[in-house]
Image 1 (cartoon, rainbow, N blue to C red):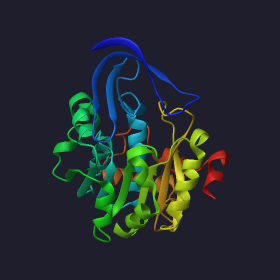
Image 2: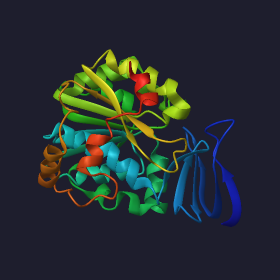
Image 3: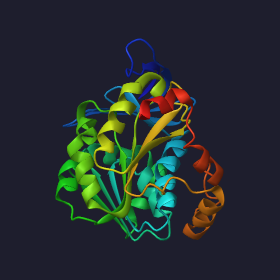
Length: 287
């Protein structure tokens, strides 16, 4: 349906952004949230959940590459990856770009997100849905993490909404404790922690919870234009404190071995290393 009307994001009460809508593609009330997909004039197709921008075709590569390539290459030998959320399939696609990955399990609670992404934003996931290494489960990520066998994954990637509504349970002490249990000895977990210029409490509180279950906690940054407010932080928690201290040469060699060197639009070995060097206004929230 052609509209040429404006959509206003509702993340913050006092500040926001808006998109001129060329065409509305879908509006669905699922069992969990309100989902809108529309075609914009500048950002391609856009998905909102409960009025908050989740992904746009134009800049999704920034978020997806940093959420995926950083933990996998920091680990260096990750073959089993668990993805919580990420119903658009973009993280799954990037995980499967790593030739050493043998198993990628994706657990998304809202099947409507997957359905609408497949129908209206197929380029985000590409052929990932059909990769034999992928197992896609429509279900509760909390229950999956709670029941997974100890040491069954090397990396956990959490791509969720902010800690409100359906995403709230993915930021609890219980979740991080179970994540630590299901990870192998050098395992690590990453998750989005919001834009600290506007959401400093989210970063601070999440880091405190992660620190109860992991030896090394920190954050790294990505500049995603449609996540307004400056740098976005991606939370980091690892069992091995050395995992985030590699130099660019080591990361470059690992990327070449994994088959992703030269196949990215934002991530580079140098960006990888630099992303962990935080401005003081962000670092002060990490203790």
